[in-house]
Image 1 (cartoon, rainbow, N blue to C red):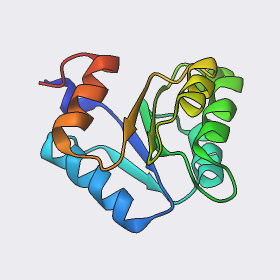
Image 2: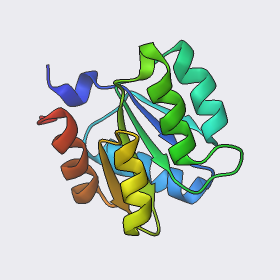
Image 3: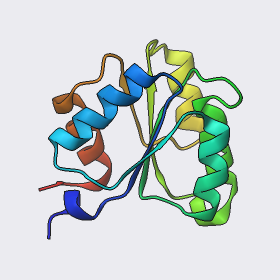
Image 4: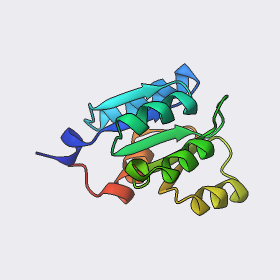
Length: 129
């Protein structure tokens, strides 16, 4: 069985359009185990109880931004090794450095499409096919 059939991914974004684009890209790759969260606070609470293999999170969200979510996941033993991709509309060096300091695995700049998403994920987990 291919990794794309087994991997469990959490998508975290407060904007329905962005969530839809990310989910569509994942589904184009054949990934079906996708859980959706509308903010970092909701995601952190749920992931601490039921970790996933990979989190794809927007940076700019109310309540708890993407780096706050990453920091929370890294501080909790059962979730500290979850793969984490930060999605941002502004890939400035300071933001990326902050993410790397928190052990972010990779990042994507908007707009997200399937080829960029696949390359980003495979850089973390290996071939999905």
